[in-house]
Image 1: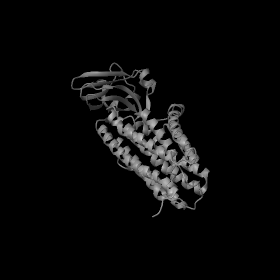
Image 2: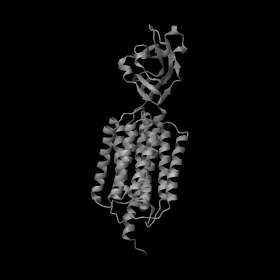
Image 3: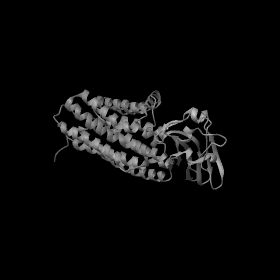
Image 4: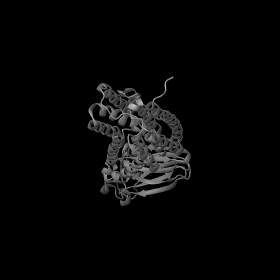
Length: 421
């Protein structure tokens, strides 16, 4: 009978924890997906067709932009949007927007386009929008959104400008909706902390002659999967969740099957799935503190100091509770998969073949570019991703462990999810 070596015994616990972590993550995702789908069915995101006020007779002094059916208890907001923006000289006190019930002829709100309203115009994926009303629906039924200019004459430029109304009706997240995400984060943080602080009998980094073609092929596969995910017919919160899970699976598969093992005994070991090389008892608390602090600094400082030019796709998505829950679930999965790919496969492969500087550069840049489609337009968030990539790569380089960078990443995302949910 063969007696296990100390090294193989030391790696058996991380391997078992990795398997348990994978199992609980799958259960969490299934649970969260059911809640996302349930919430999404109760939400409304309505955008009307573009309507120019000149399409109705001038004598009518009113033009309907849209008609929606709402349910009692919905948290609803009404926006009016244009592609060319809201020029103060053109819109100031020129029109009002009314929301009313056609069945009862009851007027709910009539909002003038005064200075206070125009000052809150914001750039979104629908163009430049102004919120004209919000609140909780008291009576179920149809609601009409109309532009009114009685007692006034429209300028030809304003009359010819196409307008769109966007109506969002939401149901707030309950504790039962958030439960799978919070329980998933709690277990993942605990499990990864055990691995990050477990004794490490691994050799220090060494050069390997692993083929560059394998590494390049792995990056190419990820790029192709990323592009393909953008063309898949998956919409809304559940679609975003499916895309996130799809890319996570691709990252793990590439990292695990294409990593050059070299002199390592296991692929997991080659990816850095083991304890930190030094100060392992301090590593767990230090990584949690670093990740949480980084999230707060990114959200409070970086995102506010750097102005946005438009609403980022991720910002538009998380305006819905179902999508916030979906993004929270992906924020749980992403650190585990991304660290194995960016800091395990990319950093580890390049570090052992071409050196530390090249590994740093490739890991940080590929990580930032992969997140760019989510943050495009919100440049503070883009810089935050870049800074986060630098910090996570620094943790990986300092500790030699992707478990340590994963723990930092999980703590970062847990803090962001806490603020979001």
